[in-house]
Length: 603
Image (tube, rainbow, N blue to C red; front, top):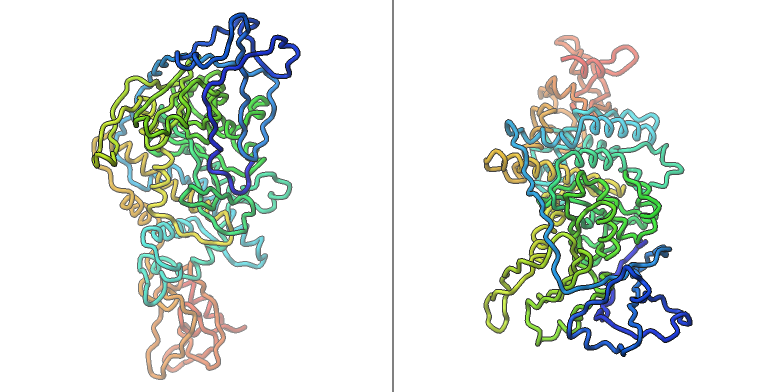
């Protein structure tokens, strides 16, 4: 398992087929070989003309094929296999393209509002769970805490942080500042109340963390509930698997934080995801080292536990496919290997297409990467072999691409345009069908990642799991929008862009709160209680402001007595040294009269 920096790629080796001559006394040799004469289930090795001419075999001597071992990842411990690896018999022939039905989204009766698509994944059960855990967390922090979060107030909070992703400012407090004040935020919740909710936001009971091996226990319930709803959505036959980096540069997460040099967000949490072609993410596997698969909602068999770790990533995500027999999985070279392709086909009847590293494809008799890199080899050069329905192709583009497939063949060959430096224009280049299909169907995870990064929810905090909550919130919005676009396509109507869709959800969420009638000092974020001028009539706040549970109506003791704005009448003036910090009015607060409480309860 890797915990820190992972090498971007393994060293390239010369993968050209090497034939060798077995010694006369095979029993005296310590090499693991498979004799073509002794094994009745193996046919004679069929090689190309130019490849077989390099063989050093002589008449009357046995020709044997070396059995290559699976190359492990850097730093990953691979369990040794007790079974003897099967020898691949490569032939210069194409494989049959497996037919896959195009996904047809069912036509809905009508187009739902954006809020319903959002609540399909952010369910009322999830809302009540977060609210209850947040209230419990505030009591665990401080037994005498008077913090109490309601579901309607939590919905307003969600709407505000979503709006902040659409209208970013340098700092959170700027939304309430006098110079940069944003009414769409400041008029729905005070700054101090917003900070109180954010600091007490929680998703699990800390008392249950003792003895747990799940290192993502803080957000496990959140991811489990949301992923369960994602899995209920229909999948396209073409699925892609890739890794997602949730940006985090802090040090509070320990070695849960990974480093991947080639990612835009190099530091962060690694999530392995499976998505449809349009970018809808269905399943998520959170990487946490040795306990990654124990904490996932699927379980691996004893045989699967012995496989390399990259194979287990794919298998854990394939297990949640609704119809693996009619699905094709696309993945990059980090996951692809001959052993994985054979296992998926034999155990799940699932096709696989993916780019591969040279030392993971079983050393087929292909033109070597070093030879194809020569300038004399034109762009578009293709070499391929197959064995028992497994195709390995090597194609020259800007770089050399090696691809492994059990679902898509080389034919029909198409043409793609590439820029030629010598001709200074785009020229047609021959491209095999397997490469063309891979390029068009592999980008589901990247498409989802792009949608999430368009309007990221700002949630910087010392608690590392808040970044994961912000990512999940953005992912819910993106998945809801993709589902909305599917309905629009079925109804043949033009969908609204993601920005408008997010605005609609924000306006619906903040509708759970009544607007503050006027700009007060509390909404500006100040806590000073100014002394009223003599002869000036005090401004009494409205009934809505008095009974606003989101504001912190706290008494503050002042030096000079002021007129009580609740019990004072003309000719009968009573004065008090207690002032409400939010309402900015003096109120009686003693053992005889409690105008402070009555003022905030009645109008």
